[in-house]
Length: 106
Image (cartoon, rainbow, N blue to C red; front, side):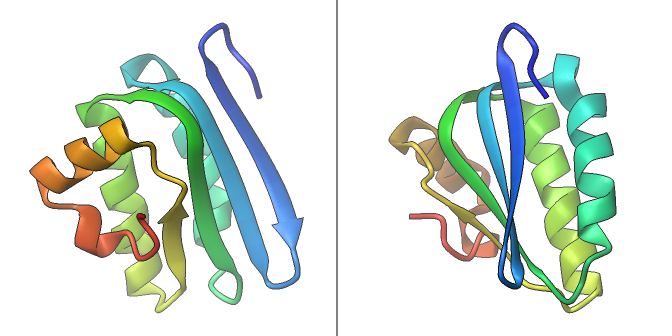
C-alpha cells in the first residue's frame, strides 16, 4: 500500500509476519494502518514484527495505534516487537514511555 508519503508492506516468513512501515505515520493514514494491522493482530500463533527502518515521522495517532497493537497482542499472549527504529523515533518512544513494550526497539 502506498500513498504519497506513507508506505506499508507485509512479508511473511516462517512463523513471523513483518510489517514494513515507512514515510509519515499520522492521522491521515490511521485508517489504512488499522485496516492492515487488524487481521494480523488475530494471528496469535505468529510473531508480529513492525520494521520501522524507513519511518520518517509518527504522531500521537500513530503512537496510539502502536499501543493498541501492543495491548491486543498481549491479550492474546501473542509475540510482538518492533525493530530497526530510527534514532529520532526511538527518542520519541523513550519520551512517551512506550519503549519497554516494544521488545526489539533498538
